[in-house]
Image (cartoon, rainbow, N blue to C red; front, side):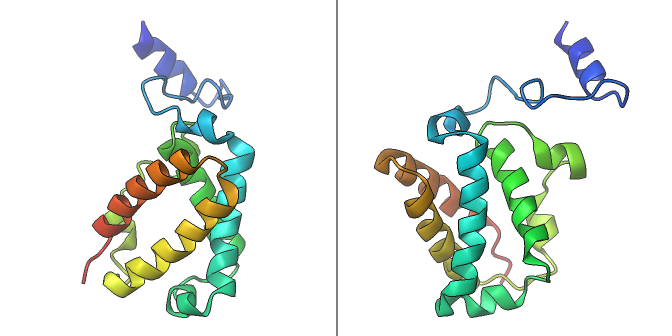
Length: 149
């Protein structure tokens, strides 16, 4: 019966609510950290840190303007990645992160700049230290996978 729900959820005639887009088998980190407002704030804070921290200047230089577009995509990705609505997938299909990042030279330094900004954003926007640690650990593995140099 679930397959029929998926067909109707993906149908252009039946608009998908955020709740119906959620995969109940995914992590509940989305809810634990505060849902959409916290994840939106996390994405915003990440790009704010990238712009404010001189250490991230090389990372900032590869992001095309306007940065708000990248911020929105990060929010959409994090929403689904943390167990909430798969907003990125709804708009763009499977994230295929490694393939999407291949045009950029991502070495250890670039990864470290990205992680530096994300760690600061996590510490600012996510209140519980155990949630901070779990999310940072998981995102670190993901960031390391993006290296192509």
